[in-house]
Image 1 (tube, one colour):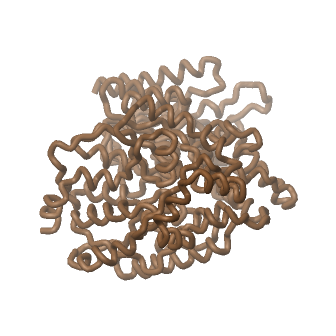
Image 2 (tube, one colour):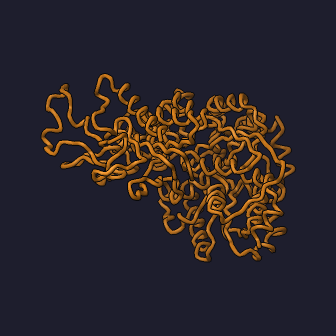
Image 3 (tube, chains in turn blue, brown):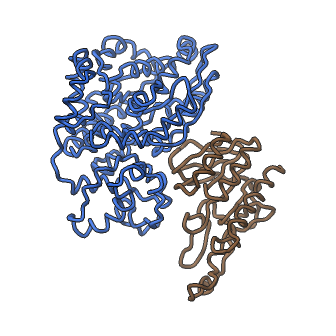
Length: 413
Length: 191
């Protein structure tokens, strides 16, 4: 970038080439959306003059950030759009949006009554009622809640044995591994422990806040962000880096905190890594030594989530998975699955969401893999619901493919 | 991370070279800032098993006694990309493969030797429709190799618009860009 550029989020660098529009999944499927160029840098020129030029159609942006990956001039198009929504979209969030976004308030409640909640949320009359009253689309399969949270399991089964390891990390599990799918957290602990690394929880961990940002709950998201950054700082000071499992949480912690919430994360930023990146670097440098199960075989298709695409770290996952001797990995074409967190749950977005995902679903059907490998939890819901093919997190694949005992023997000596 | 060839830039020249090299059995990675490549060429390259680092850009390289050893990208941080050969297909002014200051024209990544007119007033013609000289400025090559301070870098092959003498304003630009990419491919295959 030229040194004299002082425009926010690089918007003056926009050359109007429209490449962003060719990759926008919403623009291709929803005529009500003006597209990234118009909503982002073009609209910004007017909004700078006067906020009355704010256009409500910006809510259709699903913040996949594919426009930013495509931009040859480094304009932070999606950030411009989110920032405009924060600054000018002053409508109070609806009850539904608050419910969908408050993952760490709804989570404990739903987990406490998990069997009842899962049963009720699977009934068509209940789904029909939710569709009519609050606008959660009835066609959508709602995420299941786990009766035992990951944190509860960890304190009971894992906490006591962690201090014996020389190397220690802090695990940012996020809401999904905690309330919806604790098995992911268990797999994470198993893999780390096998490599001789102790796993500690982050005291005071909060939701990363991405769903709150998307639903206009900025003060709540900012509070969570500050609490998290303080907690990360304490962990870093005690010598433990932070390892995450969710691509979207990671992008939020690294980029959205300073860009959108104005929460300074500079002291902890370089100490946060995604688990696939962490393991790839460790194994490639020879520091971590894997022993693979003999005869383990799988044919998997890799779907790179939009936010992983934006981080530019998909290569860590593919290189890591290709280290497994019995792995035949097919990389799917780069497409958005359409769910975009809470976006696809909303009645007004359901159809568009499924249309956006169609090329990906067709691609998966053509490849016909045993399972899809993907780092993102909401992609998992969308792909499993729409294709019937199961989706596994790379960490869970490693937990299956590694000979955990022999790996532990080799790494804990 | 190790590859046989790393291609810097994913435009016409970069994708042509990358796909050809990948198909001849070399393990290639393209670092493509922005989506400058057409979907079809991207698909063809991916189907041949090539690695695409989309939305990333090379920020520095490690040069040692006339050879480029590795490059670093913005997003991969301290993970270096190593290769036996490199193709520089970073384009001209729009993609910042070549940068023009008030008084000089330079190649920003490696500081390669660039051909340009020292007299700034000769860079352009005031008549809009006239051929513009600045569009033909670009890096110099010798035996397909890039030059730095007059010395050849024996495993760095510039191709496409980054080269002196090639510009998108020429009527046969597509042919020239493709053929410069094929020159780089042949030079790498000959090694």
